[in-house]
Amino acid sequence: MDTILDKLTEIEDAANRILGRTVEQKAKASQQMKEKTESFDRALQEETEKKIAELRQSLQRQREENLSHLRVYTQEQMDALEAACERDHERLADTLVQRILEA
Image (cartoon, rainbow, N blue to C red; front, side):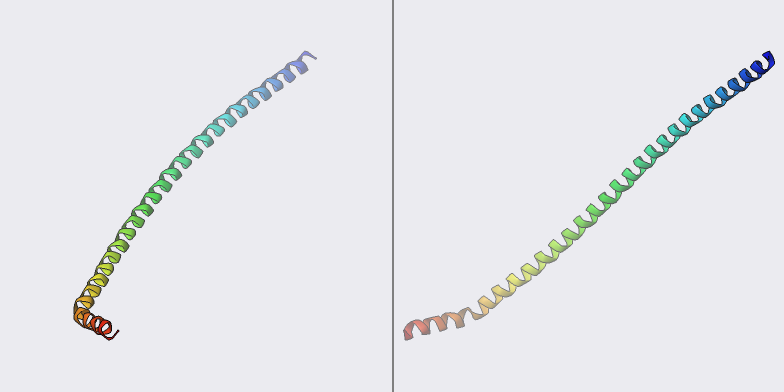
């Protein structure tokens, strides 16, 4: 009977050691997964911030180009209006004077 109890005690001790190692391995695996997750999150955050910065720079360049084109276009239109006014000033003034005199 003592041998059976001794064997049962050995089996229980072995089972407890196995459970203890399993708990340790589970804790270790959990810690490794947590570290991998944190590392992935940091890498993803860095990549996201880099892409956002690149997009902002691209949009800034595009906005500056558009603004430059708009300034050129506006200046061309202003120059054309001034040239038309100077070119037609005499004619418009004469027409205006004629209308005033006719009235």
